[in-house]
Length: 156
Image 1: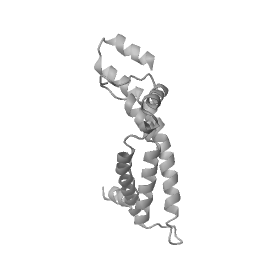
Image 2: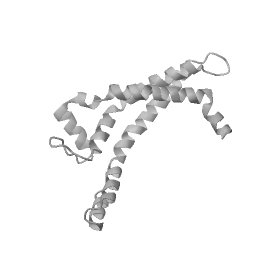
Image 3: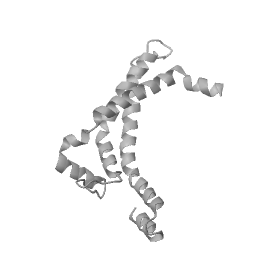
Image 4: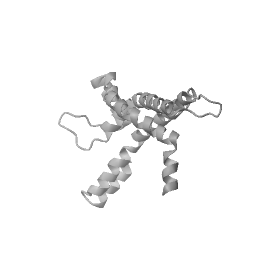
């Protein structure tokens, strides 16, 4: 990443487009550190919870059970990966305030948050994130279970 940064600054003293690309690439590893575990937790938990709702021998699950399974799995996954989301957000901040820390990477960011703010700082915003993610994934699973996506594709 350092070589990309040097190329950008050598190309044109203050090339804002190139600086923006560097900042977006700088946030890519923390983004993956959040999204990959989220998907692993969400899909495995949803699958297990959804299988508990099978009421018939044909394997169909009532849509309301899919909704609640999606909500519970989404909420659990969102809170579980919130520490990674806090680190990602701190690293991707474009404008630093007067009293805000500068971070050199993921480990440095995590260490400074732990030392200066304590472990509870990693759960900042987790309640709001869970309240947004839970219905989002519940509704998505209901739409999938009811076959709305296939109906829209056939209509188009």
